[in-house]
Length: 267
Image (cartoon, rainbow, N blue to C red; front, side, top):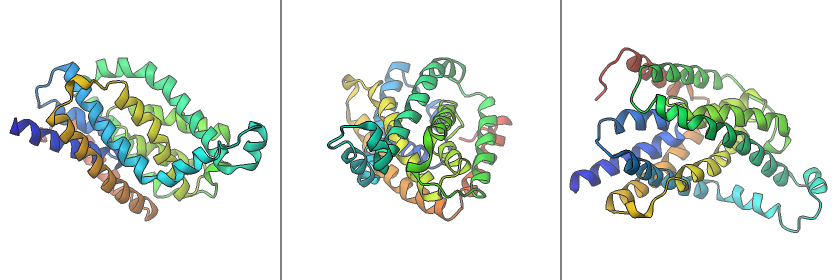
């Protein structure tokens, strides 16, 4: 029992850190969960608790933005007029567009990806090397557009890139921040858009696999750990992104990718 709680605490902290820090939560969970014997059904439900913890963290962190988006719907009569007059309503439509694109592709890719990468494979290392390149390049990009100025085409492209996060070794936050910067968003807005975009995706990942029958002290411990560490990770990511220091994580992912490819036993 004690060992299970300690393991849950560790996995919760790992999820909280890697869900938002651009180092791929799926890749790290794949690496570490492979050394713990958990039935596949229980593993899915356990991971759901981890996602729910990070969901609470990000909603709390961007609560003011979330409220602004919902307030843009108040008294909505003409979507066309609201689109032209209310910046928050435009942003909400772009978020919905990106989410729908990711949802369609993500659902299509999730099953085959889980089958291919159910066990740790050296190919995951290549995805880490790709992520490393993306993060290093992100420090060199800067745009001038606000979220509400991005347009539907950019929203679709960001949704497409976000769907690649189903691949273990590809970070959702990393590719969405990179995509926003590459498409001309201001650094602050690229970061905010990435945070807001994570809410529906994280909610789906947690709620669709949630099983209340697996609610126990271990799952609650994992939930709390992922929530608290997730909040800390969000603060760190915000500061590092604005300071143009994402390359620090890029070098880490590059080293990890090489280690995985070479078959180094990290643990």
